[in-house]
Length: 256
Ligand code: MN
Image 1 (cartoon, rainbow, N blue to C red):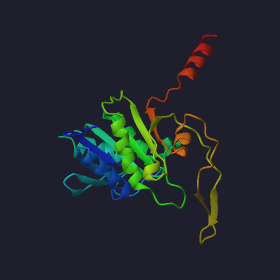
Image 2: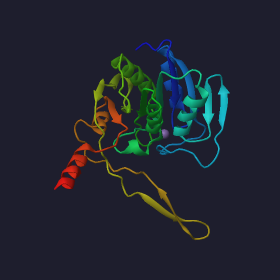
Image 3: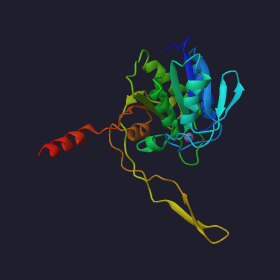
Image 4: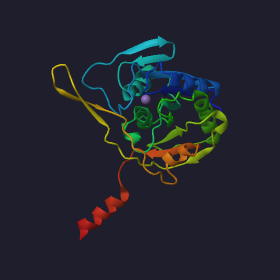
């Protein structure tokens, strides 16, 4: 896909200095885009779609088109579009590349996906990129860079409908092992019970949510299953969360 002449807003939840956002910004620039960055100053992983409304926000200019926001990913995208780029609105918004996958129900906790949700709500086609990283392993950024290129090549000419974004998950494989794009649906892996309890110096208990996941068996066609096979998982996510079959059931009950 040729992005020449297009303005692309890049954000994330790992913070504007994270390695993944640099990889994504470079990939966008290589496709010819004019790249703008508005991203959280500090890491905001698992911030979800949180909006800061009880304190003021600052935009800290780093260079001509790079801005750090002292808030959440949602704040960074909102201010990026409505303030930083208000004279020159973006044609496309990309989020990531997150250090770690955003699979299954991660999408509701994820700040990476939420940044793309915010872009979508502002009427900008938005794509979230996340790189699966095995526990204790180094992120494979070269694979991630290739995956971004492969995604844009695959979806050249793509027009996303309103309120729909793409959630892209990149498998934890070497570059030469990276498979093609596969369309998937959101999978499910249950949250584990890894809650650590300890005591502070005054003897009060505190809790730390640990490694949250227990791997469920992966169902075919899901994002989880796809990255397990080394392919590039692309899931279209809708921001209208209405569950239509249940709505229909309830409507029938109401008539009974
Ligand atoms: Mn993150």
